[in-house]
Image (cartoon, rainbow, N blue to C red; front, side):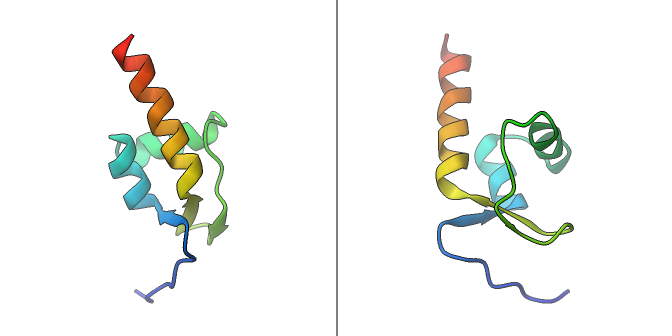
Length: 66
């Protein structure tokens, strides 16, 4: 597989899924529901903005704490 250079401030799908505590299938569901949008990469290797991922993770943590 080709090594892809990711832009600063972005996360790969694997990194994003790990931070959100879901698998890749769960991440695809989150994107499909519009809770998170891709911000670069390719169709097979999307990137997500780190700030968007952090905001969603905080929102999910607050929901789980309630």
